[in-house]
Structure formats: C-alpha cells, structure tokens
Image (cartoon, one colour):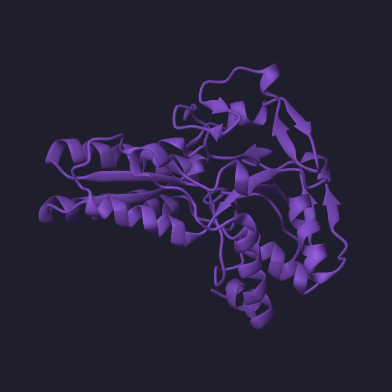
Length: 283
C-alpha cells in the first residue's frame, strides 16, 4: 500500500485511476434503485451518510490552535453556524464543494427525504464519522485507524501528509456496533416524529490526531519513524469532529465503546492477523 495518511480522504472519482461516472452510479444511482424498491414495497429506508456532506471551505479556513499534538478550532476567533465545542452539528453548511463523494451522499439524502414525503416512507439519515474496529479493511481512505495501526505494527512506511506534515489533523472514531444499535432503534420506530437527519459519531471524546495515534502505537508496539510531506491535497481538512447531540436527544443513543477500546480491539486483531494489510489491499 505504500506511504499514505489522512483523516478520511474521500477523493473518489477525481484521481486519474478512478471513474467519476462509476462513483455516481454506485452512490447515487444505487440509492435511487433502493428507494424505488422501498416505494414498491412500502419499506423504510435508512441511509448511512457521511461527514463529507459538510462544506469544505469553512472547515479549511477555521482558525486553529495546536494542543497536545492536535488541532482544535479557536472558537473565540470565529463564529460559524453549526460549530461549537462539541463539534460540527447538522446545521453546519453543506454548500459545495464537498467532494464528488460528498455530493453523491448529499444528493442521496435529499432524494431519500423526498421519497419519504412523496410516498409516506419512514426515512432515517445517519451522517457517520470515521468508523473503526477489528476486521475493518485497512485502507487509508476509509479505514485510517485500522490502516495506521496495522502499518505501524508491521513497521511499514507511514507519513503525515499536508498541514506542515506534523500529523495534527483530527478525526473522531466510532465502532460499527454502536451504529448498529442506533439503526436497530430506528427500525423499531418508523413513526417517531423527530428530525430525519442526525450525526452519528464518537464526538470529542473519541477524537484524536494522527500524531496522537502514532503516540498510542508507540506505547503499544514500540517506536517507529513517521515520514513527513507538507504538500496539500484536494479535499483534506485539518479538523472534523461531529456533534451527535441530536441523535442522543432524539434516540437516547450514545457510543458505548471508547476510543481506547476501539484502538485496542484493532491492535489485537492486527497482532492475530499479520496478513491483514495484504488482504485489505487486494480487495
């Protein structure tokens, strides 16, 4: 897999070896096909969306401070709708650009709500942060926590890319079991009269930078040298932590697995499966 890093880099359909049309067909046309099925069968629809629906421009220009090797927004120096000490809320801007990937997800959200209104279907939209856990494909664009831990353990080349090459960029993580718990609640409550869209993430308690993740790995596996590349990349943002207050208030939901539990679960799986990086990269 070579030298990679990022938070959750969604540049699908942009690079020369990727098909923009295929991205649209998979994410958007695929959603339409499922919604048509739901319409015919009067079925509910739950969409796992993404933090990538939020506008890149205000995220890139956030005034930031560095504390404990991690970026954090300087809230005393800015006033952005939908941003607070608990993270990015659903009211944060979704104006483009959001990436082609983000645009397909946002369009899917809009269509889902319209189908729900037009045909009386129960619709729930969960904007997820970075999912992480044992057995996840260790790929830098989707499984950055699994990729980093597996690569660090195997002493594979790693490097911080962008933002001065120091690894200060921050994401929060969430275990799929916690997502499943919310989805189960939604399946059982098709008629609940609450907002249809909610953030679903680990939030500030589970957030960490790549540099902090490397520190965790060093304590777990020993030292490993991380390279640096200060070059910027399209769609990378320095800080993205989702605020899941709405999901907690509407569904009495909150994550049950801590950041430490998630990281340790991945580490144990990595130790038990030395072939995991090769399996992941060959899919």
